[in-house]
Every structure is written in C-alpha cells, then in structure tokens.
Length: 333
Image (cartoon, rainbow, N blue to C red):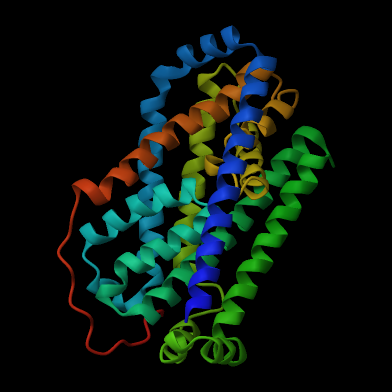
C-alpha cells in the first residue's frame, strides 16, 4: 500500500515542478516581448483601451453562462437534480482551475464533476464531465474552420491558415474518439480491471455515455455559443487597441488564440504564449507589435478577474452538503 502513495506523491511533486517551470518560462517570454514592443508604447495603448474592458468582462460573463449551460446539458435528464446556485458555484471554481492548471479544460471538468457528484453519483458525474470535455473539443474544432477561412482571406495558405485548419480537424477527431471510447466496452472493462475503486462504476459510466448521439449536440451548441461570444470579445479588443476591425479579423484573432491555447496548454493562463502569437501576427492585423500584443494582455487582465473570483469562491460561498442519490440512472439524452 505504501508504493502507490509514494508514486502518487512523486507525481504530484513532478507536476508541481513542471508547472512552476512553465510559469517562469511564460513570464520570461512575456518580459522579453514587452521589452521588444516598447513598454511606453504598450502602456499607452493599454490605458487608451481600458474603457472598453467592462464590455469585454460582460461578454466573458455571458461566456461563463454558456459554459455552465453546456455542463448542465451534459447531465441530461438528471440536470434537474443540480441546483442552479450549485452549478454557478462549480462554474466559477472550474474557471479558475481551467486558467491555472495544466490541460486546464480537462482539469476544470474534473473539478466540476467532483463538486456536482453529490447530486447524482460519481459515475454519472464523471461521464457527464467527459461528455462536456468532448463537447468542448468539438466546439473548439468547429469554430476553428471559419477562423481558418478568415486566415485564408488575410494570408492565403500560410502557416496560420494551416495551423487553424489542422487544429480544427484534430479537435473534432479527438472529440469523436473520446466519445467512442466512453461508449465502448473494452476501455471500460480495462479500467475496471485496473482500479477496484472504479470497478463498480464503469458500467454505469458506459451506459450513461451511450445515451444520445456520438457527438452530444446540446452541449456542443452551448459551447459554440460561448466561442461565438469570444469572437465578439476579440472584435471589441482589437477595436479598443486601435486596429481597424472586421469580422474576418475577429475570427482570425479567435483562431490565433485557440492555436496558442493548444501550444501553451501547460503554461498557466498561456502567459507569454498567446502574447507571442499576437506579436507574430501583427503584420497580418496590419498594426504594430505593441497594439497586437495589447489584445492578448487585455484578455489576460479580464481572465485574471474571473480567476480571482473563482479562487475566492470556495472561501466566501459555501453550500450545504447534498445527500447522495439513492440509485443513479443514465443521464444523457
């Protein structure tokens, strides 16, 4: 019994060390980018754009609502057992985890499953979290295709266009593959053999996953709504920093962010990664490096507000423990 404990402790230490290394690397890259762009010019652009931040924050609030709706849709018929205030609380906490943890979206869904499992059971909550993760991947992939089209209009068959197109294909395939594995008997049987803890839950997990279509369109559409609001955010941000904005440029900026998110998934908040991507694309956006970087920096600032709110939520917003459900049932329709 001691060996797994030591192994788990070793993994946690390595994960914590890697997280720190990537965080320091991201901050170092950001510092170099700021120096190259010019701190004074950058500061002037950020100050001029500051009055637009409440609108970006309002759109982010809408995104949080759509993400929560996607989570609720993933629970299907059993969603009515989750009080809205409990779901809102889980969404806020999950947002903080998503921004700061490696592979943030998966970590956020796992966190929300842990917070919501008292209302429907562990296997059901885990299946819904995996469904939500698959839906998020599908939505990210589907929105990447119009982003790639926008990139093609601006740059032709450039590295940006190919990266966005490839990103879309990979995410849609990954989403479909994840859902297929959830519904297959052999992966669930393998998991049951590997873990006594999950042996009693794998069948319920699989039965829950088998309800509905291969791609869960309810959660997918909710996440697509969230991504559409994010396109609107980038339209506001690019306009705020003085870039002549169109729908094509807003979609290009969204695709740029999604690619940076994929590359910098181990960097907390993608600090330095998304900033570098926008600096690299300054010529495509027909602007200066400082203005292009300011789009990413302002996005980080709004993100930081919601991360702080999510981090404080467990301290200031407590809920009564819910009784465990007597008998779980398949949830997704």
